[in-house]
Image 1: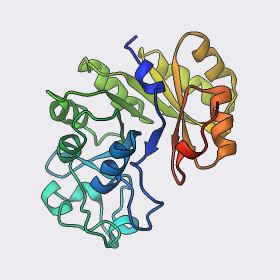
Image 2: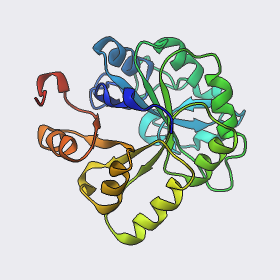
Image 3: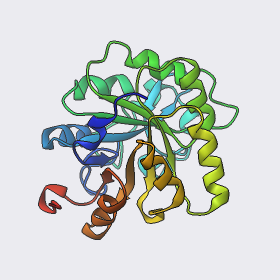
Image 4: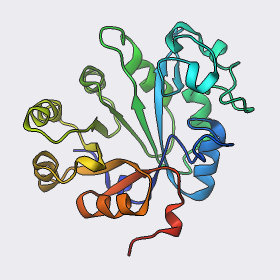
Length: 241
């Protein structure tokens, strides 16, 4: 199991340290710069473009963030790089641009947003882009096939399962993913505590939560997990001793 102690060290800014898309929008270079300056780790989402470039973007569709209809995967990285996020100066960044900006200042947790039977080359492209980067990086996904791809490619970074749920049928599916030999779990805080997470923590697995938006959820996280992924507030002002 790879070292994940650094995942516990500081709060993780969900999609960067944005301001709930008022002026600083999610998954933008501005949000990542703000997180790094504040000393927060960064969680962000990766999509795969028509020209096989990993870009930082959450949705499959462009409407919510860019105000136009269209599939992010039908665009090239250059085309996406011309699109304004939320009407701001920020454009859709590539993973390479994001890495250049952060430059090892804070840890990065990358969530790969997959599509069943349409992810050939995605995991490899992410690993190729990360090659030579100096700084803490972890990779995670809801999508088991992408985690399998990353394992098959012998990814040198901690790998994690992004998950949720509180019923035994769900746990069975999660346990199948953990059989890949994953290093950490990112779990929905509202589904804690549960038997699956309790078992994995007892085995030494690091658990972070998503997405914490207030002190109550923050307290709940630290009662049942190791660190939080947060948005919408400054955890430096709500430190739990």
